[in-house]
Image (tube, rainbow, N blue to C red; front, side, top):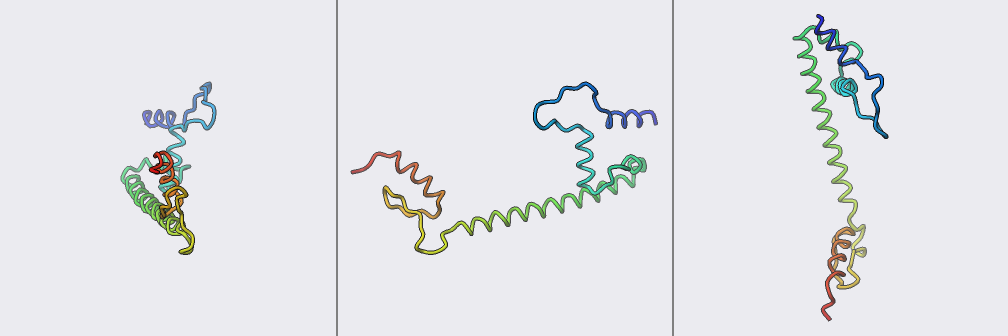
Length: 128
């Protein structure tokens, strides 16, 4: 029991006179645990009581990990869908709009492609 009390004191302890860097301070171990418990859908105010019962704690954390991974994969799928939707919307709206190099007349498929092409095209000496 004394080891458990020391563990809790270590986890929840704060350094009284520590200097912090300018800007956003670095996260403490306690802050990281709180963030992870929230993402695992575990009540962070009573997690010590839950952790005493080891078998129950393992089940809770395994279920939380499954839920966290499922949610994270859904977020990644949504981001991917937004990326692909954005790419298809960046194409010219009609056949009349295109990106043409002013120097050589090459037609590019996108504005970024035209920009890259012009960097190469204008750095090369003129063939005439």
